[in-house]
Figure 1 (spheres, rainbow, N blue to C red):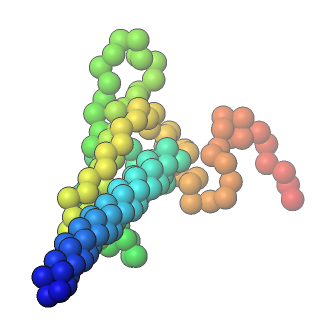
Figure 2: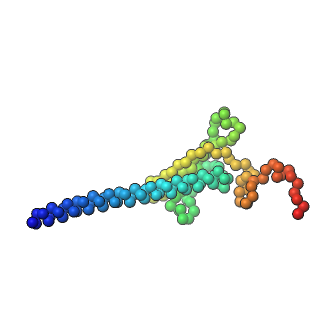
Figure 3: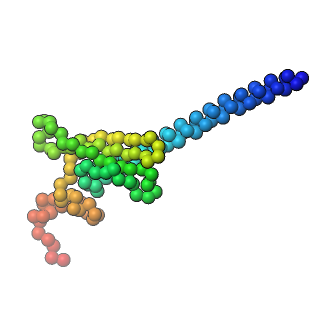
Length: 143
């Protein structure tokens, strides 16, 4: 009788250990996936800011994100494209790197971007579109 109780208790402890280990691994993996998704979202947002002209298309960083993302840093690396077929466009290879300070999470996104003209960068702070050549040549209304 005592042997059966000890055997049942040891089987219960073994099963509880296996289940607990599986649950812990599942929780760790879910946290890793959440952080990777968060890093991807931050990198996509930073790349969108570069595309819209909010941030200049030039090398920068590593710099921390603003609160509440202060545990993340961003870095921008750029390089010109030396391809004769793209001679008309000043394309740049832009790589956005997002890192977590405490965990080994790094997300890299690369895209070819055309740096916005100086006029477009100057009008980003306003809610109007960038000035075109027609806008500059058109006479202003007196009122």
